[in-house]
Image 1 (cartoon, rainbow, N blue to C red):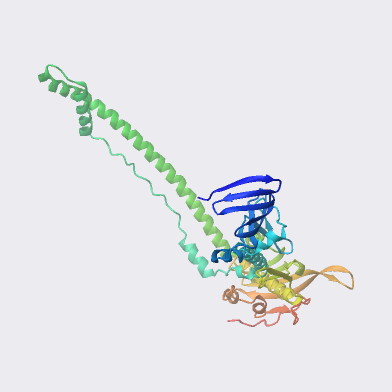
Image 2: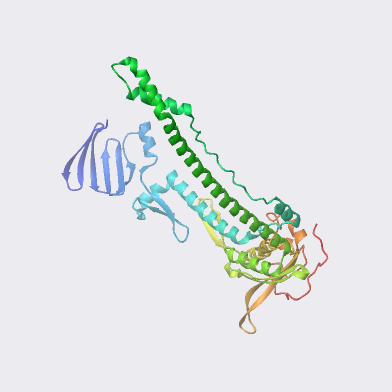
Length: 437
């Protein structure tokens, strides 16, 4: 056990008595210098925070143990870390107050905990930026594969209502022998006599006089409970089967509607789907269904290039994170990937509205400033015509949306720097007879 006793001499000065000798402390709470036979130490701390640092600054023994302690400082500190607006690490005490003492900060920054904290915070920034990029750019990876008419018919034929299997009343029917046994036990408890030779006869009389009545009562109660249970099961089965039959018919009707592709159904289904979509980008959809041509025309109001995430992050050798603005070419390339990916994303869902939709022509437009008129115009930047069969053979998670779009009949004027020039959506599409398989 370490023994320590302090004797106050005057304000700011005290003698420290311990098993290793006497030392002198000069200073005040939070900062002091200790002088003893092992050398001179500087003590730093923040009162009330639990933060404390002690570092050897001069003198003392040259023993192996002293040399090891003089080669650095040992920090006893509780601290937390965060990043400021410029992604620089902030060190705070246990009360959340930033530590500003240079000597204490220097000691903290030499600890492995600090270095690990910098790494964790930097990686968090990189992950957040990467996730935001992924949310915008990789929407195409969530494209639905169009269902085939054959698959819908197979699913339709497999739909059968679930039928409720009634439970059986599990309490056994009482028997006359069981009741007789009960009465025998009762008679033993109730009938006894000092004229023991009469006891047997009296017990038999008790059983004979009560047997039929007791049996009728117990059997009647059992029969009533059994009927109530079975009546409940009958009613529950009726309601269950009716509900499941109704659900079954609704599923069948929904699948029949998918196969039929009637105009009213298609329009209502598209409205419902569009209203339920949640994306990290703003969009609006206009559509026109032509059942006689098995074609759906879609106009897609695209997000603006200004809405794209424009930061890129990397880890420096120091472990800190560097965040910079993307180049215009990189932003333009990612914007093209995003908006072309939206064409695949929406087309996949719309093909699944009905198997009668064999063609989707989807055109994307964005709002741009016309420098000649100083007005905002809706400029179309791509138009593509997908056919169901070829579209369904794509591996959506591995495609390049821009390149894959150009494998279908399309209009897309993309510069070497990925700037999307205005196109005329009424112009005839190229590669009309091209098949990608």
